[in-house]
Length: 574
Ligand code: PEP
Ligand code: MG
Image (cartoon, rainbow, N blue to C red; front, side, top):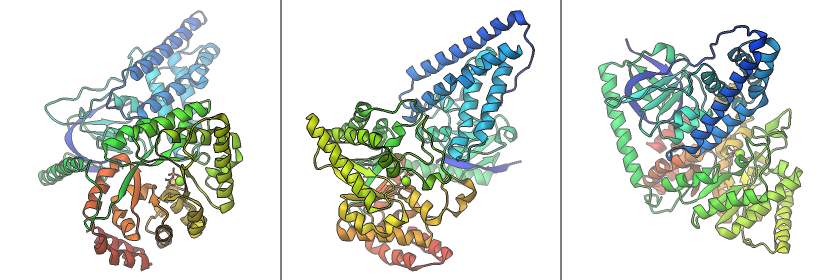
Protein backbone atom coordinates (compact mmCIF):
# COMPACT_ATOMS: atom_id res chain seq x y z
CA UNK A 1 0.00 0.00 0.00
CA UNK A 2 1.36 3.38 -0.96
CA UNK A 3 1.29 6.48 1.21
CA UNK A 4 2.57 10.05 1.15
CA UNK A 5 4.54 12.07 3.71
CA UNK A 6 4.95 15.83 3.76
CA UNK A 7 8.06 17.63 5.03
CA UNK A 8 10.10 20.75 4.42
CA UNK A 9 11.45 21.13 0.90
CA UNK A 10 15.09 22.22 1.09
CA UNK A 11 16.70 21.22 -2.20
CA UNK A 12 14.69 20.95 -5.38
CA UNK A 13 14.55 18.24 -8.02
CA UNK A 14 12.65 14.98 -8.45
CA UNK A 15 14.18 11.63 -7.51
CA UNK A 16 12.77 8.15 -8.03
CA UNK A 17 14.60 5.27 -6.39
CA UNK A 18 14.73 2.56 -3.76
CA UNK A 19 15.05 3.32 -0.07
CA UNK A 20 18.28 2.72 1.77
CA UNK A 21 17.84 3.15 5.52
CA UNK A 22 20.41 4.52 7.90
CA UNK A 23 20.13 3.09 11.37
CA UNK A 24 18.56 5.24 14.04
CA UNK A 25 21.22 7.41 15.63
CA UNK A 26 19.77 8.25 19.02
CA UNK A 27 22.10 8.17 21.99
CA UNK A 28 21.09 4.80 23.44
CA UNK A 29 23.85 3.70 25.83
CA UNK A 30 24.37 1.42 28.79
CA UNK A 31 24.84 2.74 32.33
CA UNK A 32 27.12 0.93 34.74
CA UNK A 33 29.37 1.71 37.69
CA UNK A 34 33.16 1.68 37.39
CA UNK A 35 35.19 0.37 40.37
CA UNK A 36 37.45 3.02 41.85
CA UNK A 37 40.67 1.36 40.67
CA UNK A 38 39.47 1.51 37.04
CA UNK A 39 38.27 5.13 37.02
CA UNK A 40 41.56 6.46 35.63
CA UNK A 41 41.38 3.88 32.86
CA UNK A 42 37.80 4.92 32.05
CA UNK A 43 38.90 8.58 31.84
CA UNK A 44 41.75 7.52 29.54
CA UNK A 45 39.24 5.66 27.36
CA UNK A 46 37.19 8.85 27.08
CA UNK A 47 40.31 10.89 26.21
CA UNK A 48 41.32 8.36 23.54
CA UNK A 49 37.85 8.57 21.95
CA UNK A 50 38.09 12.36 22.02
CA UNK A 51 41.44 12.26 20.26
CA UNK A 52 40.22 9.75 17.68
CA UNK A 53 37.22 12.00 16.91
CA UNK A 54 39.51 15.02 16.56
CA UNK A 55 41.71 13.01 14.17
CA UNK A 56 38.61 12.02 12.22
CA UNK A 57 37.67 15.70 11.79
CA UNK A 58 41.22 16.58 10.69
CA UNK A 59 41.19 13.83 8.10
CA UNK A 60 37.74 14.93 6.85
CA UNK A 61 39.11 18.43 6.52
CA UNK A 62 42.26 17.44 4.65
CA UNK A 63 40.36 15.05 2.37
CA UNK A 64 37.63 17.58 1.65
CA UNK A 65 36.17 16.49 -1.69
CA UNK A 66 36.45 19.05 -4.46
CA UNK A 67 32.67 18.97 -5.02
CA UNK A 68 32.05 19.96 -1.40
CA UNK A 69 30.12 23.16 -0.87
CA UNK A 70 32.12 26.07 0.54
CA UNK A 71 30.06 25.91 3.72
CA UNK A 72 31.59 22.53 4.50
CA UNK A 73 34.70 24.02 6.13
CA UNK A 74 32.49 26.21 8.29
CA UNK A 75 30.44 23.19 9.40
CA UNK A 76 33.52 21.16 10.21
CA UNK A 77 34.93 24.09 12.14
CA UNK A 78 31.68 24.40 14.09
CA UNK A 79 31.65 20.66 14.88
CA UNK A 80 35.30 20.79 15.95
CA UNK A 81 34.52 23.74 18.20
CA UNK A 82 31.62 21.86 19.78
CA UNK A 83 33.91 18.87 20.34
CA UNK A 84 36.53 21.07 22.00
CA UNK A 85 34.04 22.91 24.17
CA UNK A 86 34.65 22.04 27.81
CA UNK A 87 31.03 20.94 28.17
CA UNK A 88 31.75 18.05 25.80
CA UNK A 89 35.48 17.51 26.25
CA UNK A 90 35.86 18.10 30.03
CA UNK A 91 32.51 17.80 31.83
CA UNK A 92 32.06 14.06 31.04
CA UNK A 93 35.60 13.34 32.39
CA UNK A 94 34.70 15.11 35.63
CA UNK A 95 31.49 13.12 35.88
CA UNK A 96 33.32 9.82 35.36
CA UNK A 97 35.66 10.75 38.23
CA UNK A 98 32.92 12.13 40.46
CA UNK A 99 30.25 9.49 39.93
CA UNK A 100 32.42 6.56 38.86
CA UNK A 101 30.23 5.81 35.89
CA UNK A 102 31.04 4.63 32.37
CA UNK A 103 32.21 7.16 29.78
CA UNK A 104 29.24 6.65 27.41
CA UNK A 105 26.79 7.43 30.19
CA UNK A 106 28.68 10.56 31.28
CA UNK A 107 28.67 11.79 27.70
CA UNK A 108 24.97 11.06 27.22
CA UNK A 109 23.99 12.92 30.43
CA UNK A 110 26.11 15.91 29.47
CA UNK A 111 24.72 16.06 25.95
CA UNK A 112 21.15 15.87 27.21
CA UNK A 113 21.78 18.82 29.53
CA UNK A 114 23.25 20.80 26.65
CA UNK A 115 20.41 19.93 24.27
CA UNK A 116 17.87 21.02 26.89
CA UNK A 117 19.65 24.38 27.10
CA UNK A 118 19.50 24.79 23.32
CA UNK A 119 15.80 23.91 23.40
CA UNK A 120 15.24 27.03 25.53
CA UNK A 121 16.57 29.42 22.87
CA UNK A 122 13.91 31.60 21.34
CA UNK A 123 15.84 32.00 18.14
CA UNK A 124 14.92 29.15 15.75
CA UNK A 125 18.38 29.10 14.16
CA UNK A 126 20.13 28.73 17.53
CA UNK A 127 17.59 26.12 18.66
CA UNK A 128 18.40 24.10 15.59
CA UNK A 129 22.09 24.00 16.55
CA UNK A 130 21.21 21.27 19.09
CA UNK A 131 21.32 18.97 16.06
CA UNK A 132 25.01 19.81 15.62
CA UNK A 133 25.67 19.00 19.28
CA UNK A 134 23.95 15.62 18.89
CA UNK A 135 25.84 14.84 15.70
CA UNK A 136 29.20 15.57 17.35
CA UNK A 137 28.21 13.48 20.39
CA UNK A 138 27.23 10.57 18.12
CA UNK A 139 30.63 10.64 16.45
CA UNK A 140 32.35 10.59 19.83
CA UNK A 141 30.06 7.84 21.07
CA UNK A 142 30.84 5.67 18.07
CA UNK A 143 34.53 5.94 18.95
CA UNK A 144 33.76 4.94 22.52
CA UNK A 145 31.81 1.86 21.54
CA UNK A 146 34.50 0.91 19.07
CA UNK A 147 32.67 1.71 15.84
CA UNK A 148 34.46 4.73 14.49
CA UNK A 149 32.79 6.87 11.91
CA UNK A 150 29.25 6.98 10.70
CA UNK A 151 29.04 3.88 8.53
CA UNK A 152 26.58 4.73 5.83
CA UNK A 153 25.39 2.01 3.50
CA UNK A 154 27.05 2.02 0.12
CA UNK A 155 24.73 3.07 -2.68
CA UNK A 156 23.87 0.38 -5.19
CA UNK A 157 24.67 1.32 -8.71
CA UNK A 158 22.08 -0.67 -10.62
CA UNK A 159 19.18 1.47 -9.37
CA UNK A 160 18.81 4.96 -8.00
CA UNK A 161 18.99 5.01 -4.24
CA UNK A 162 17.37 7.44 -1.84
CA UNK A 163 18.93 7.70 1.59
CA UNK A 164 16.40 7.72 4.43
CA UNK A 165 17.71 8.69 7.86
CA UNK A 166 16.43 9.98 11.14
CA UNK A 167 19.17 12.60 10.87
CA UNK A 168 22.31 13.18 8.82
CA UNK A 169 25.19 15.43 9.72
CA UNK A 170 26.68 17.80 7.13
CA UNK A 171 29.90 15.79 7.46
CA UNK A 172 28.00 12.62 6.49
CA UNK A 173 26.44 14.31 3.48
CA UNK A 174 29.66 15.74 2.24
CA UNK A 175 31.32 12.33 2.04
CA UNK A 176 29.00 11.31 -0.77
CA UNK A 177 30.27 11.64 -4.29
CA UNK A 178 28.02 13.67 -6.53
CA UNK A 179 25.09 11.59 -7.74
CA UNK A 180 25.99 8.69 -5.44
CA UNK A 181 22.58 9.07 -3.91
CA UNK A 182 19.62 10.36 -5.86
CA UNK A 183 18.14 12.15 -2.86
CA UNK A 184 18.22 12.57 0.92
CA UNK A 185 15.32 12.29 3.32
CA UNK A 186 15.44 12.97 7.06
CA UNK A 187 12.95 12.94 9.92
CA UNK A 188 14.38 15.99 11.64
CA UNK A 189 15.85 19.33 10.62
CA UNK A 190 14.55 22.62 9.31
CA UNK A 191 15.12 24.78 6.28
CA UNK A 192 18.06 26.53 7.95
CA UNK A 193 19.75 23.37 9.25
CA UNK A 194 23.32 22.92 8.11
CA UNK A 195 22.39 19.60 6.51
CA UNK A 196 19.80 21.40 4.37
CA UNK A 197 22.34 24.01 3.32
CA UNK A 198 24.90 21.37 2.32
CA UNK A 199 22.29 19.36 0.38
CA UNK A 200 21.42 22.51 -1.56
CA UNK A 201 25.12 23.05 -2.22
CA UNK A 202 25.41 19.49 -3.61
CA UNK A 203 22.35 20.14 -5.83
CA UNK A 204 20.77 16.90 -4.59
CA UNK A 205 17.01 16.81 -3.95
CA UNK A 206 16.33 16.78 -0.24
CA UNK A 207 13.31 16.94 2.07
CA UNK A 208 13.75 17.25 5.84
CA UNK A 209 11.39 17.33 8.82
CA UNK A 210 9.38 14.26 7.69
CA UNK A 211 9.01 13.17 11.35
CA UNK A 212 8.47 9.39 10.94
CA UNK A 213 9.90 8.51 7.53
CA UNK A 214 12.67 6.40 9.07
CA UNK A 215 10.07 4.31 10.93
CA UNK A 216 7.47 4.03 8.17
CA UNK A 217 9.69 3.41 5.15
CA UNK A 218 11.15 -0.08 4.73
CA UNK A 219 14.45 -1.02 3.12
CA UNK A 220 14.09 -1.16 -0.66
CA UNK A 221 10.64 0.50 -0.78
CA UNK A 222 10.12 2.38 -4.03
CA UNK A 223 10.17 6.13 -3.33
CA UNK A 224 9.40 9.31 -5.21
CA UNK A 225 10.88 12.46 -3.72
CA UNK A 226 9.65 15.83 -4.87
CA UNK A 227 12.22 18.28 -3.53
CA UNK A 228 10.21 21.24 -4.79
CA UNK A 229 6.98 20.43 -2.94
CA UNK A 230 8.56 18.67 0.07
CA UNK A 231 6.67 15.42 -0.66
CA UNK A 232 7.78 11.79 -0.26
CA UNK A 233 5.59 9.18 -1.96
CA UNK A 234 6.20 5.64 -0.71
CA UNK A 235 5.38 2.69 -3.01
CA UNK A 236 3.45 4.76 -5.56
CA UNK A 237 0.87 3.27 -7.93
CA UNK A 238 1.65 2.84 -11.64
CA UNK A 239 -0.04 6.03 -12.83
CA UNK A 240 1.65 8.25 -10.19
CA UNK A 241 4.99 6.68 -11.01
CA UNK A 242 4.48 7.34 -14.73
CA UNK A 243 3.50 10.96 -14.04
CA UNK A 244 6.58 11.58 -11.90
CA UNK A 245 8.87 9.90 -14.44
CA UNK A 246 7.59 12.39 -16.97
CA UNK A 247 8.06 15.30 -14.55
CA UNK A 248 11.55 14.06 -13.74
CA UNK A 249 12.65 13.98 -17.37
CA UNK A 250 11.13 17.42 -17.94
CA UNK A 251 13.02 18.71 -14.90
CA UNK A 252 16.31 17.19 -16.11
CA UNK A 253 15.82 18.60 -19.58
CA UNK A 254 15.14 22.00 -18.07
CA UNK A 255 18.34 21.81 -15.97
CA UNK A 256 20.38 20.92 -19.06
CA UNK A 257 18.87 23.77 -21.03
CA UNK A 258 19.45 26.12 -18.13
CA UNK A 259 23.13 25.16 -17.98
CA UNK A 260 23.47 26.28 -21.57
CA UNK A 261 22.24 29.71 -20.51
CA UNK A 262 25.32 30.31 -18.35
CA UNK A 263 26.99 32.64 -20.77
CA UNK A 264 23.81 34.07 -22.33
CA UNK A 265 22.98 37.68 -21.59
CA UNK A 266 19.91 38.15 -19.40
CA UNK A 267 17.91 40.26 -21.85
CA UNK A 268 14.12 40.46 -21.93
CA UNK A 269 12.29 39.58 -25.17
CA UNK A 270 12.15 43.28 -26.03
CA UNK A 271 15.90 43.63 -25.51
CA UNK A 272 16.21 45.25 -22.06
CA UNK A 273 19.41 44.11 -20.26
CA UNK A 274 18.85 42.76 -16.73
CA UNK A 275 21.69 42.27 -14.23
CA UNK A 276 21.58 39.01 -12.28
CA UNK A 277 23.97 38.99 -9.34
CA UNK A 278 24.71 36.56 -6.51
CA UNK A 279 24.49 36.71 -2.73
CA UNK A 280 27.55 35.23 -1.01
CA UNK A 281 28.81 34.73 2.53
CA UNK A 282 32.49 33.90 2.01
CA UNK A 283 35.07 34.56 -0.73
CA UNK A 284 35.07 30.79 -1.49
CA UNK A 285 31.51 31.17 -2.81
CA UNK A 286 32.85 33.01 -5.87
CA UNK A 287 33.29 29.81 -7.91
CA UNK A 288 29.53 29.18 -7.63
CA UNK A 289 28.82 32.73 -8.72
CA UNK A 290 30.77 32.11 -11.92
CA UNK A 291 29.46 28.59 -12.45
CA UNK A 292 25.90 29.89 -12.48
CA UNK A 293 26.64 32.79 -14.79
CA UNK A 294 25.98 35.67 -12.36
CA UNK A 295 27.67 38.87 -13.52
CA UNK A 296 28.51 40.27 -10.12
CA UNK A 297 28.03 39.92 -6.37
CA UNK A 298 25.04 41.95 -5.26
CA UNK A 299 25.36 41.10 -1.58
CA UNK A 300 28.38 39.78 0.34
CA UNK A 301 27.06 39.24 3.87
CA UNK A 302 30.39 40.11 5.49
CA UNK A 303 29.18 39.37 9.02
CA UNK A 304 29.65 35.67 8.27
CA UNK A 305 33.40 36.31 8.64
CA UNK A 306 32.61 37.00 12.29
CA UNK A 307 30.47 34.05 13.24
CA UNK A 308 31.53 30.84 15.00
CA UNK A 309 34.91 32.12 16.14
CA UNK A 310 36.52 33.38 19.33
CA UNK A 311 38.56 36.25 17.96
CA UNK A 312 37.32 38.99 15.71
CA UNK A 313 39.01 39.12 12.31
CA UNK A 314 41.50 41.99 12.18
CA UNK A 315 41.98 44.51 9.37
CA UNK A 316 44.50 42.37 7.46
CA UNK A 317 42.40 39.22 7.61
CA UNK A 318 39.34 41.09 6.41
CA UNK A 319 41.33 42.81 3.69
CA UNK A 320 42.53 39.42 2.39
CA UNK A 321 38.95 38.08 2.34
CA UNK A 322 37.56 41.08 0.47
CA UNK A 323 40.50 41.17 -1.92
CA UNK A 324 40.09 37.44 -2.68
CA UNK A 325 36.44 38.02 -3.58
CA UNK A 326 37.09 41.01 -5.77
CA UNK A 327 40.08 39.48 -7.54
CA UNK A 328 38.03 36.28 -8.09
CA UNK A 329 35.33 38.31 -9.81
CA UNK A 330 37.79 39.70 -12.37
CA UNK A 331 36.58 43.27 -12.55
CA UNK A 332 32.89 42.47 -12.11
CA UNK A 333 31.22 44.30 -9.22
CA UNK A 334 31.38 42.92 -5.68
CA UNK A 335 28.95 44.64 -3.31
CA UNK A 336 30.13 44.11 0.25
CA UNK A 337 27.69 44.87 3.01
CA UNK A 338 29.20 46.21 6.22
CA UNK A 339 28.50 43.95 9.18
CA UNK A 340 24.87 43.19 9.80
CA UNK A 341 25.56 41.88 13.28
CA UNK A 342 23.12 41.86 16.19
CA UNK A 343 19.64 40.28 16.31
CA UNK A 344 20.09 36.68 15.10
CA UNK A 345 23.80 37.09 14.20
CA UNK A 346 25.87 37.72 17.32
CA UNK A 347 29.60 37.97 17.91
CA UNK A 348 30.73 35.01 20.01
CA UNK A 349 31.48 36.10 23.56
CA UNK A 350 29.85 39.51 23.08
CA UNK A 351 26.23 38.41 22.77
CA UNK A 352 23.76 41.11 23.69
CA UNK A 353 20.42 40.42 25.25
CA UNK A 354 17.68 42.73 24.00
CA UNK A 355 13.95 42.64 24.53
CA UNK A 356 13.36 43.02 20.81
CA UNK A 357 16.62 42.08 19.09
CA UNK A 358 15.30 42.78 15.57
CA UNK A 359 14.47 46.32 16.70
CA UNK A 360 17.63 46.76 18.75
CA UNK A 361 21.31 47.49 18.26
CA UNK A 362 21.75 45.78 14.90
CA UNK A 363 23.58 46.38 11.61
CA UNK A 364 24.61 50.03 11.07
CA UNK A 365 23.36 50.94 14.55
CA UNK A 366 25.82 48.48 16.10
CA UNK A 367 28.65 49.66 13.81
CA UNK A 368 28.12 53.29 14.82
CA UNK A 369 28.06 52.24 18.48
CA UNK A 370 31.34 50.29 18.06
CA UNK A 371 33.61 52.75 16.19
CA UNK A 372 36.74 50.58 16.37
CA UNK A 373 34.95 47.60 14.87
CA UNK A 374 33.50 49.77 12.10
CA UNK A 375 36.74 51.62 11.31
CA UNK A 376 38.64 48.33 11.04
CA UNK A 377 36.17 47.04 8.50
CA UNK A 378 36.03 50.27 6.51
CA UNK A 379 39.82 50.41 6.22
CA UNK A 380 39.90 46.77 5.07
CA UNK A 381 37.17 47.42 2.50
CA UNK A 382 38.84 50.55 1.16
CA UNK A 383 42.21 48.78 0.90
CA UNK A 384 40.57 45.98 -1.12
CA UNK A 385 38.93 48.56 -3.40
CA UNK A 386 42.37 49.09 -4.96
CA UNK A 387 42.21 45.55 -6.42
CA UNK A 388 38.83 45.55 -8.17
CA UNK A 389 35.29 46.80 -8.38
CA UNK A 390 34.20 46.95 -4.74
CA UNK A 391 31.01 48.69 -3.68
CA UNK A 392 30.22 49.31 -0.02
CA UNK A 393 26.65 48.67 1.14
CA UNK A 394 25.26 49.99 4.44
CA UNK A 395 22.57 47.81 6.07
CA UNK A 396 19.41 48.85 7.88
CA UNK A 397 19.52 52.59 7.46
CA UNK A 398 16.56 54.29 9.10
CA UNK A 399 17.49 57.98 9.25
CA UNK A 400 19.60 60.47 7.34
CA UNK A 401 21.61 61.33 10.43
CA UNK A 402 22.76 57.69 10.56
CA UNK A 403 23.78 57.95 6.94
CA UNK A 404 25.63 61.22 7.55
CA UNK A 405 27.57 59.71 10.45
CA UNK A 406 28.43 56.71 8.28
CA UNK A 407 29.72 58.91 5.48
CA UNK A 408 31.91 60.76 8.00
CA UNK A 409 33.34 57.41 9.16
CA UNK A 410 34.12 56.50 5.56
CA UNK A 411 35.83 59.83 4.91
CA UNK A 412 37.85 59.48 8.13
CA UNK A 413 38.95 55.97 7.10
CA UNK A 414 40.02 57.25 3.67
CA UNK A 415 41.99 60.00 5.36
CA UNK A 416 43.75 57.55 7.70
CA UNK A 417 44.75 55.38 4.72
CA UNK A 418 46.10 58.43 2.91
CA UNK A 419 48.18 59.32 5.97
CA UNK A 420 49.49 55.74 6.02
CA UNK A 421 50.26 55.91 2.30
CA UNK A 422 48.05 52.89 1.53
CA UNK A 423 46.37 52.88 -1.91
CA UNK A 424 42.57 52.68 -2.28
CA UNK A 425 39.92 53.75 -4.77
CA UNK A 426 38.83 57.29 -3.83
CA UNK A 427 35.71 56.92 -5.99
CA UNK A 428 34.48 53.70 -4.36
CA UNK A 429 30.67 53.58 -4.62
CA UNK A 430 28.64 53.74 -1.41
CA UNK A 431 25.11 52.35 -1.30
CA UNK A 432 22.40 51.81 1.28
CA UNK A 433 19.96 49.04 2.03
CA UNK A 434 16.30 49.92 2.07
CA UNK A 435 14.84 47.46 4.55
CA UNK A 436 12.98 49.64 7.03
CA UNK A 437 9.63 51.22 6.02
CA UNK A 438 10.88 54.63 7.22
CA UNK A 439 13.78 54.44 4.75
CA UNK A 440 11.46 53.26 1.97
CA UNK A 441 9.11 56.19 2.55
CA UNK A 442 11.97 58.69 2.47
CA UNK A 443 13.88 56.93 -0.30
CA UNK A 444 14.53 60.11 -2.30
CA UNK A 445 16.55 61.61 0.57
CA UNK A 446 18.75 58.51 0.69
CA UNK A 447 18.97 58.27 -3.10
CA UNK A 448 20.33 61.81 -3.33
CA UNK A 449 23.20 61.07 -0.95
CA UNK A 450 24.15 57.60 -2.17
CA UNK A 451 25.53 56.00 -5.35
CA UNK A 452 23.13 53.05 -5.35
CA UNK A 453 20.38 51.37 -3.29
CA UNK A 454 19.47 47.78 -2.58
CA UNK A 455 16.16 46.58 -1.16
CA UNK A 456 16.39 43.94 1.56
CA UNK A 457 12.92 42.46 1.17
CA UNK A 458 13.42 39.95 3.99
CA UNK A 459 13.64 42.73 6.53
CA UNK A 460 11.39 45.18 4.71
CA UNK A 461 8.56 42.63 4.94
CA UNK A 462 9.42 41.81 8.56
CA UNK A 463 9.31 45.46 9.62
CA UNK A 464 6.33 46.48 7.46
CA UNK A 465 4.11 43.66 8.69
CA UNK A 466 5.55 43.52 12.23
CA UNK A 467 6.40 39.83 11.87
CA UNK A 468 9.56 38.46 13.44
CA UNK A 469 11.12 36.57 10.53
CA UNK A 470 12.74 34.06 12.90
CA UNK A 471 9.50 33.18 14.71
CA UNK A 472 7.88 30.12 13.10
CA UNK A 473 4.59 30.84 14.90
CA UNK A 474 3.96 33.92 12.77
CA UNK A 475 5.69 32.64 9.62
CA UNK A 476 2.32 32.19 7.88
CA UNK A 477 1.74 35.96 8.10
CA UNK A 478 4.97 36.74 6.25
CA UNK A 479 3.57 37.87 2.91
CA UNK A 480 5.61 39.45 0.10
CA UNK A 481 2.35 40.11 -1.75
CA UNK A 482 0.76 42.18 1.02
CA UNK A 483 -0.47 45.37 -0.72
CA UNK A 484 1.55 47.53 1.70
CA UNK A 485 4.75 45.67 0.80
CA UNK A 486 4.03 45.99 -2.92
CA UNK A 487 3.36 49.73 -2.56
CA UNK A 488 6.68 50.24 -0.77
CA UNK A 489 8.60 48.22 -3.35
CA UNK A 490 7.01 50.10 -6.20
CA UNK A 491 7.72 53.45 -4.52
CA UNK A 492 11.40 52.66 -3.90
CA UNK A 493 12.04 51.21 -7.37
CA UNK A 494 10.10 53.97 -9.14
CA UNK A 495 11.75 56.83 -7.21
CA UNK A 496 15.27 55.47 -7.66
CA UNK A 497 14.72 55.00 -11.38
CA UNK A 498 13.36 58.54 -11.68
CA UNK A 499 16.42 59.92 -9.87
CA UNK A 500 18.76 57.75 -11.94
CA UNK A 501 20.14 55.92 -8.91
CA UNK A 502 20.80 52.19 -9.55
CA UNK A 503 18.45 50.03 -7.50
CA UNK A 504 18.51 46.27 -6.88
CA UNK A 505 16.65 43.75 -4.74
CA UNK A 506 18.86 41.38 -2.72
CA UNK A 507 16.29 39.77 -0.41
CA UNK A 508 14.79 36.32 -1.05
CA UNK A 509 12.11 37.78 -3.35
CA UNK A 510 14.80 38.43 -5.97
CA UNK A 511 15.44 34.69 -6.42
CA UNK A 512 11.84 33.51 -6.36
CA UNK A 513 10.47 32.94 -9.85
CA UNK A 514 6.96 33.90 -8.79
CA UNK A 515 8.10 37.51 -8.33
CA UNK A 516 10.53 37.99 -11.22
CA UNK A 517 7.99 39.46 -13.65
CA UNK A 518 6.27 41.50 -10.97
CA UNK A 519 9.57 43.14 -10.00
CA UNK A 520 10.50 43.66 -13.65
CA UNK A 521 7.09 45.28 -14.17
CA UNK A 522 7.79 47.66 -11.28
CA UNK A 523 10.95 48.75 -13.08
CA UNK A 524 13.60 46.61 -11.38
CA UNK A 525 16.61 45.87 -13.59
CA UNK A 526 19.04 44.34 -11.07
CA UNK A 527 18.42 41.24 -8.94
CA UNK A 528 20.73 39.51 -6.44
CA UNK A 529 20.09 35.97 -5.18
CA UNK A 530 21.53 32.61 -4.06
CA UNK A 531 23.83 31.57 -7.00
CA UNK A 532 21.91 28.38 -7.85
CA UNK A 533 18.77 30.45 -8.49
CA UNK A 534 20.40 32.56 -11.21
CA UNK A 535 19.79 30.19 -14.20
CA UNK A 536 16.06 29.85 -13.42
CA UNK A 537 15.56 33.57 -13.02
CA UNK A 538 17.56 34.18 -16.19
CA UNK A 539 15.24 31.89 -18.10
CA UNK A 540 12.21 33.78 -16.78
CA UNK A 541 13.80 37.07 -17.86
CA UNK A 542 14.49 35.68 -21.34
CA UNK A 543 10.82 34.78 -21.76
CA UNK A 544 9.43 38.11 -20.52
CA UNK A 545 8.33 41.04 -22.63
CA UNK A 546 8.26 44.26 -20.61
CA UNK A 547 5.49 45.94 -22.66
CA UNK A 548 3.34 42.83 -22.21
CA UNK A 549 3.60 42.73 -18.40
CA UNK A 550 3.06 46.47 -17.84
CA UNK A 551 -0.76 46.50 -17.63
CA UNK A 552 -1.05 43.44 -15.39
CA UNK A 553 1.63 44.80 -13.04
CA UNK A 554 -0.31 48.05 -12.65
CA UNK A 555 -3.49 46.06 -11.95
CA UNK A 556 -1.68 44.12 -9.21
CA UNK A 557 -0.45 47.35 -7.66
CA UNK A 558 -3.99 48.78 -7.64
CA UNK A 559 -5.58 45.63 -6.17
CA UNK A 560 -6.20 45.38 -2.45
CA UNK A 561 -7.81 41.95 -2.21
CA UNK A 562 -5.16 39.25 -1.53
CA UNK A 563 -7.06 36.64 -3.57
CA UNK A 564 -7.29 39.01 -6.53
CA UNK A 565 -3.55 39.82 -6.26
CA UNK A 566 -2.70 36.12 -6.43
CA UNK A 567 -5.05 35.58 -9.34
CA UNK A 568 -3.44 38.43 -11.28
CA UNK A 569 0.05 37.21 -10.41
CA UNK A 570 -0.79 33.77 -11.80
CA UNK A 571 -1.85 35.44 -15.03
CA UNK A 572 1.36 37.45 -15.12
CA UNK A 573 3.40 34.27 -14.74
CA UNK A 574 1.34 32.16 -17.17
C1 PEP B 1 17.17 41.36 3.57
O1 PEP B 1 16.83 41.78 4.68
O2 PEP B 1 16.38 41.17 2.62
C2 PEP B 1 18.60 41.06 3.32
C3 PEP B 1 19.04 40.78 2.12
O3 PEP B 1 19.42 41.03 4.39
P1 PEP B 1 19.47 39.81 5.45
O4 PEP B 1 18.58 38.71 4.93
O5 PEP B 1 20.88 39.42 5.56
O6 PEP B 1 18.91 40.48 6.67
MG1 MG C 1 18.35 42.48 6.03
